[in-house]
Amino acid sequence: MADFDPVSGPTDRRDVLRALGGAGTAGLFGSVSMGSVTAQRGFDEAYYENPLYGPDFADPTIQRADDGTWWAYASNMSYIDDADERLVPILSSPDLVDWTYAGEAFDSRPGWAYGSIWAPDVHYHDGQWVLFYSLWPRNDGEGDQTGIGVATSDTPDGPFTDHGRLFTNPEHPFPGNTIDPYFVSHQGTPYLFWGNFAGIYYVELTAELQNYRPGTWGQIVGSAYEGSTIFQRDGYWYFFGSTGDCCDGFDSTYEIEVGRSENLLGPYADSDGTPMMERNEWNAGPTHLGDNDRFVAPGHGDVTVDDDGSYWFVYHAYDTQGLETIDNGWPPARQLFLDRIYWSNGWPVIAGDGTPNATAPIPNLGQRPAPVAEGTYNVVNVQSGHYLGIAGTGDGATATVATNDAGFRAAWQLRRLAGGEYVLNNADSGQTLEVVNADTSDGADVQQWPWNGHPTQRWYCFEESDGTYRMKNACSGKVAEVANASAAAGANVQQWTWNDGDHQRWRFVPIEDDGSGGSSGSGGTSGSGSSTTR
Image 1 (cartoon, one colour):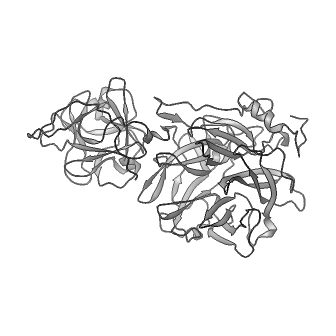
Image 2: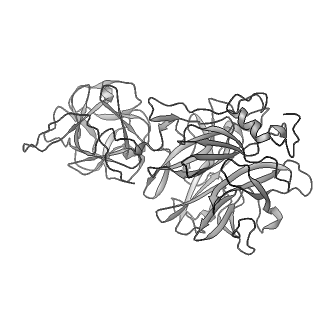
Image 3: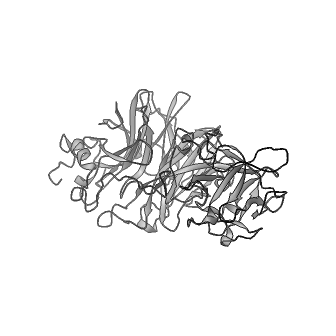
């Protein structure tokens, strides 16, 4: 690699790197392999594990081709040796989980400034693949300016033909660095958004996307943000913004905050009702994706929708069980993550509890056959044979178990949602089984409350080899169990980390109307169910 021209590179650079990408590339790109990483699955094939690719795939953007393949693009940089820098690394995946390195977007560096290519944004538009990119000067000499350029390709894996810069810092009326582009075409008008902790701005583009229209500048949110993602769902435009420190390793404070508007160009407000134009301080608004004990500083990603209609967020974060930096302290080891976006009262709940998942149900789970058919059931604990029910009639009544279903509110209506999870509605009260207060800790109480769409009211049902089921909460990732493995009638039902106990296993026994109010049938009936989007 030391023989590469740092500006143009060899003519076969992309082919060389594509060939090497599937194998370990230590020695070519520093001491850490950047090759393809196949995602490890969780307790069965219905689960995947984060991170999906690393140790360096920062600022990912994602698009899907007509053949169903997902393509992801990212920043890559080396401040030690620019020959080690990939000119927009590309990954491909058939399923959003298993990613393969596919090469670089460019054969050579864009020529209008000598810089690192950051934060690409790729879209398929008007018959071509369009790549907007940030160019950050590698030299700090006079006249070097950050800016945004555009390139196009007939195929998602390139090579992309550079069409030069759209604009740099001196060419627009706003402060801050001109980086982190995000493209949106709405009602025939193409817009480009950008910004770096001085406001998120926009401008209209010309039809061929290679120039801007003077006098169409504007701003949508305050100076707390960079790394924008903007998309429309159910009558609202959503702004996902990254706020905090991205690049201080495990001490980084990056997180995702969200605003929404009925109009693409605003005004946007967050879930507290605060106008996003007033958000000028890092990490001051409601957090929609933040740290947990293992994963740090999630942010700067993109949104895609899978075949069952579920929304997914690809982003980067640090794994504290892995590297903090790549080489000699830079660049930071920001890896590729994927988590589902659930929706509650019109607001996104990323990853179920607002922190990155270590394991989670795979995308398109709703396209698989339903493990349990929709219908009305008794839910019977395997260890005790007792029935899941509710010890009361009102909001917050606790789930307990009883020796039989007579008069115990033990009938449950199972409804399968489009993403493959279930809602359990009590047939007597009409209320929904949930983990109280969206608590994610072991021992949190299971209760009934009116349906609100939050992940804490959604359950994944997974069949075990013996035909029994675990009910795994979408918010916490923990399972419903009888507390303390009790065999007593009236024992409390809570959530706990899966430990393979019979008190954590359940049977679904269909309720048939035999005229006596009792139940008959056997558990474990499978079927396709119906798909309801929530």
